[in-house]
Image (cartoon, rainbow, N blue to C red; front, side, top):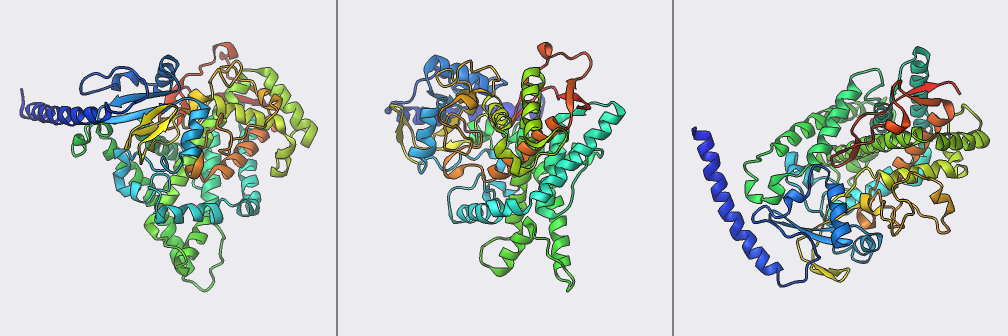
Length: 502
């Protein structure tokens, strides 16, 4: 046995003894309260083996066995999983003040991201300041309305790229095309530049970086379950996230510094983009917004706004191409409302209920973030007749809620019509807890308004400007719909479709 192996064994033995002692103490304290039901944990590791490589499915199956609220012991971390809309409402509305903070995963301490991120900061003065900036300065309706031409230009570029592929007879990688469009939309909105185009490698490299971030944050990390391993970082998750965060913030820093230099000149013409808005706030000292906060806010916006939108677009197109009837029905609505071959305008959306229903149905079956972001119980509280202990991690299984047979008829069937038949409109903005792809309560995703607009424009325009078929050799019946789990739920096999003239 070499020295390194010996040291690893000695460290593991010491950590095991310490962990067993801490778990015994915690178990004794928790045993006095009525935890939700769940599988019996193994010594030391608890229920970690129950997660598998697709935790959203594994935990859904456990909820079918034990009920809509279950508890798991993941190493030293007590975790409560919610799998019904009624209990999600208790967490996100009734007891929102108790569950507003996050369980911070170890990897998010890379580059001190957890200390600046609007997604992961605890409710505090800094968090409220960032949320106010997002709600009033970045994603307010009047701000988004003022940037309609920008979004239209990015969708038009997407259509031009697809036209070129149609001319050459090439297939389109739907996820990559949607990612590039979302990336350029965000980069134009934030920096007034395009970070990538469909023909370049920049989009591919950036997509790999963003997916790397989402995958590392989403994968089970031993350090989160055994904090004594924090200094070891045995899976290298924090190390890789440090690389990804650093690589991304370098791009942002360069753009910010260029803007700061240009603002010093007398001939500078304001762009009215997000960067100018944030720099104006900082210079006026009306808000405490420094450059580091700005970089981390941009990191949040790009990570959340590109990967989730492209994944949702890819799932939507995959489901549509599996069902020719849905494709024809959507195209018929678009032709009747705006005319065949035209771009969808934002003013058209209210007149396209079937297109909206397709997007809602995609959110229901394929929520981009299947567990939302984890919550943390700040106090001991009763939920569903059971006690959630203080400090417990709370996961809301949006994937399971969207497939709950008690709420949805034929829950595994992609059927947009269900949203046109409901008497009470179900929305995705946090009021209807049967459908919560963006979360709810005070921690609802601040970029929701922009994400919805972009999805509607991209999907509607692709369906109205082209006919579509699967690549040769692929038929709807054998189409691969396997999922790739990370913080976001990706399609394991990229969707490639061939555009045809309408």
